[in-house]
Image (cartoon, rainbow, N blue to C red):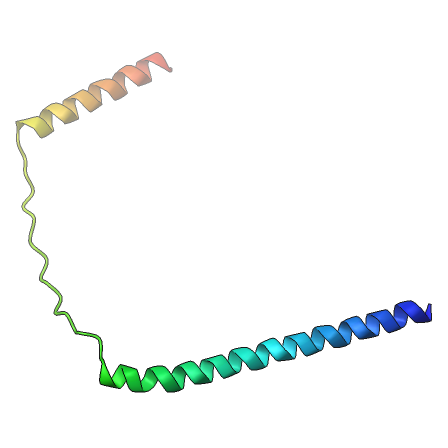
Length: 84
């Protein structure tokens, strides 16, 4: 019984030490990146690209649209007649 208790104690200690190490490493990494990247961001800013105005699209209504609508309507009617 004492062996399993000491093993669990050592496992918990190792887990907490590992988590603390990872937390410290990531915190240090964030600080280093911010101190290195911030001056570079000021020195080399991203270029600002002006957004282009969207081109208006005129709707096209021609004979083909009406024939497509007619074909779809006929197909739907035929499907409904078969499946009722």
